[in-house]
Image (cartoon, rainbow, N blue to C red; front, side, top):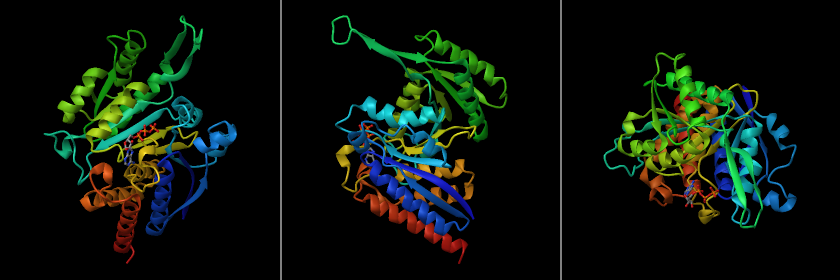
Length: 362
Ligand code: ATP
């Protein structure tokens, strides 16, 4: 029996609904997958914690997380706290503190889900977006001076290091190599951003030489948005900077049907630190507490977590259960045009896991 220690950080808004749903799935998987067991520790960090303590998470929080095999995260965001405080105080603090430099975002049109793209068949859209997750435009370097005066100055410095760019590009080439099409698109803005982005292009060409079996091309980020809409099948693995990939992956999620479905993994590939798994949506305060949150983004993130832990058969089983449920329009939540609740979808996935377990262990 293999036991994994999982840190649960629901955070804010609908994170407090989808993470308990995710825990329910892991429990169901424990009964279905007899060789697996999960031990949970709950962390109540986020907006409410900030109101009590003046910080989103305690200073020793990273040490507490390090003891775990993986982190399952909900969202950070609060209508009464500025977004840069909630983001930097929790999610980015964990990503940077744990050196989770590779953020991956698989995008597919799941069975039963409609894409807003008129001529796109489900098999035409199967992407893996790789986002540099620790530096670039979100490095946090910059400042403000002369605040409130007419000559006020504000800077956000985009920091690209050769080591940081090289490691994310190598990660992306390796990932592309492991996928059937072995196809990578490197996205930059090296026409207008003529220093760091030109360095990206140069390093991409150097790293490409290590992967002769991977076919790769380059695209500017603005052209990439049009290509995602007009020629989705021409893309497979995509790598981009922190900011560019952040924007492209929201577009990708919308093209694949809903923000509520999309998963992500913040990986520390060398496994020095635990990696973190989360739905890509935010705290969605407009639907909080109503049972309307689509938990599929969290469940798919758990699939990524199981894959990272090496539990490929459990990951596969959960993905099949998710696809079985999305294929049924009666189990669609409101973001997908249906009436199902978070609990309906969760119980349906659990029931499917239990049914599969019956097949395997009659
Ligand atoms: P934040 O500021 O934390 O990023 P947000 O509310 O601005 O949060 P998102 O949470 O990413 O942004 O979502 C935008 C909208 O998409 C929400 O207002 C909500 O209506 C819808 N949405 C997002 N996630 C889900 C979900 N899991 N289920 C249903 N609807 C969702």
